[in-house]
Length: 162
Image 1 (tube, rainbow, N blue to C red):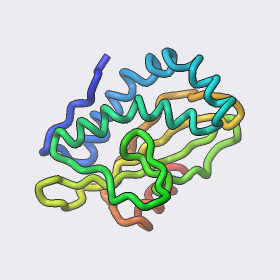
Image 2 (spheres, rainbow, N blue to C red; image 1 turned 60 degrees about the vertical axis):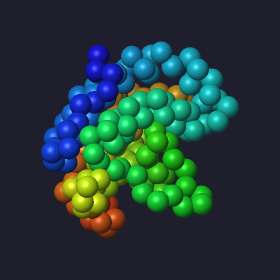
Image 3 (tube, rainbow, N blue to C red; image 1 turned 180 degrees about the horizontal axis):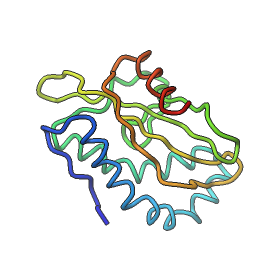
Image 4 (cartoon, rainbow, N blue to C red; image 1 turned 60 degrees about the horizontal axis):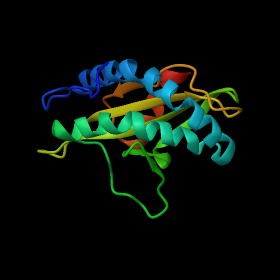
């Protein structure tokens, strides 16, 4: 089990995506199984916010490792922003795919090199989930886009999902 993803400052967006997916594949199910009871109860009390609790545990190591490797994945927060997993902003997400018991939300983060502040691309995080009960039927998945402007990101997400 990989406890933290391994990123280097010289990685491109595709390499970051691959390393991030390896990390998620190695830990998502163990974490899910260990939290399932707690999150099932939370889902009955707070609904979809229970998924945020899971992502807070799953994604924080990924984003911390990106920072440690010399990248920035967050942006300036606005007053009403809702953030999970340290860097996933609800305003930077779409949820348009699937049925109520198998929905898919995709978050995006534009990655920048700390040194140059130049965007290297966008990391997409897809979270499969149910609105009927607490259930993550398969591992969350990362995708990469070279684009980093909002409209181009939305087009890239549509290309992937449709």
